[in-house]
Amino acid sequence: MTDIVKKSLLEIRELLKRGEVKVLDVVNSCFDQLEKSEPVINALVSWNKEACQTMAQEMDKTGPDSQKPLWGVPITIKDVICTNDFPTTCGSKILQDYRPCYDATLVEKLRQAGAIIMGKNNMDEFAMGSSTENSAFKTTKNPWDIQRVPGGSSGGSAASVAAWQCYASIGTDTGGSIRQPASFCGINGLKPTYGRVSRFGLVAYGSSLDQAGPMTRNARDAALMLNVISGHDPKDSTSAPKHVPDFLQATYQQTSLKGLRIGLPNQYWKGRMSQETSQCCTNVLNAARNAGCKVVEVDMPHADMGIAAYYIIAMAEASSNLARYDGVKYGVRDKDSKDILEMYRKTRSMALGEEVQRRIMIGTYVLSAGYYDAYYKKAAQIRRLILEDYMRAFESCDIICAPASPSTAFKIGENIHDPLQMYMTDIFTTSLNLAGLPGMTIPAGLGNESGMPAGIQIFAPAFQEATILSTAHILESALPPLGIPAGLTAS
Image (cartoon, rainbow, N blue to C red; front, side, top):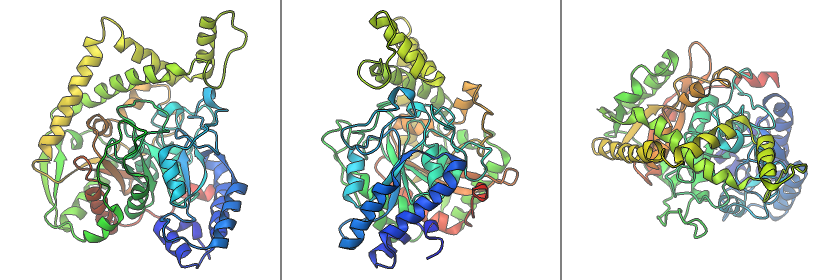
């Protein structure tokens, strides 16, 4: 069967279920594509072909299992999520040899559902970055143009899906790290409601913001993945004891957008994005209008403060969470120090990257005596105001649409020496994490000037991912497909 790697997750699942393709053929096809494309795009930091082939052969002997919704489907996992059969490096030298003795809860769920985990994706160190240039190991490149970044910090996951190395990946989203790389790579990326997916086994960056979610080629694939990884986990005190609906079924039940009210926040849409991004997003809104949606303007007066509040809170939490990487408990340690304080200092200076050190220092500063009220307390107050903005907005609309990024993917190295400019690429994504709400990026088209993908986000009230996924499925069905990533022709 030709082009087996270009099938969607649902398509390959049906072929496996009907016995029209062997699991081993699927696994071999994915690894053939990986071996061809990986030297060009650098999407993974570890993988295990032999183990996956052995698993595939065992599955082929027993045959399809209808109780396992991902039976025989190869996927990849961002390297910030613990797996007991792969190292979990978080893209950092300080954890380069760390191998957890357990699986994260969501990894357990994926294995129980029959998924084959091919490997772990490259990422910005400890999920701190917007371009996957901050990895300690290598820079991932965008499959649409290998001179450009794939976004971050889940850039490895996004590139892996876009380059047909796997059928889906799991990323994490602290300030947009699923939605922004999904936009840059022309795929779908869903950030669930905070608490929908267990964070047990997810290495913490900003504990009140981090959330894992699926990155896929279409909305229904994302719905199936979310079905598998959602649910209350007693091992995670922030996990929500909420009913998990059948998200995939919801996309079949809702067949029309007639009467759906789409809210457009003025603060997101006026003068903050490139012309080609604006044009792509406008095309999606026109498709929504043609499908019967009603578009209304909504006001989010505190949106401008979101990115500043986000970086204060995220860095404050990072400075606390990363205190554990001191050379004593995990990984790398400087062995020539005279005393323990010198060992702490040298180990952290040697094994943590520049961006991580910057965020730890800023986070420590905003939490320090005399500055807490001026920075962290203010940021926490703004966080509450932003949530109230969303709650008021959803009184007059069912979903909110906003661009995912001010521009299409920028060139590698373009922003790496300008941290503030890099932070501003997250301007449309961070407020959703502060509010803890769900959001999803879908492809909006290719930019006229750059030829690169642009994405649009769909937001909904808490725990209404089914509304997002159903809307996303109908809209993407009405839009022209993006085509083949141009950068893959170099592989």
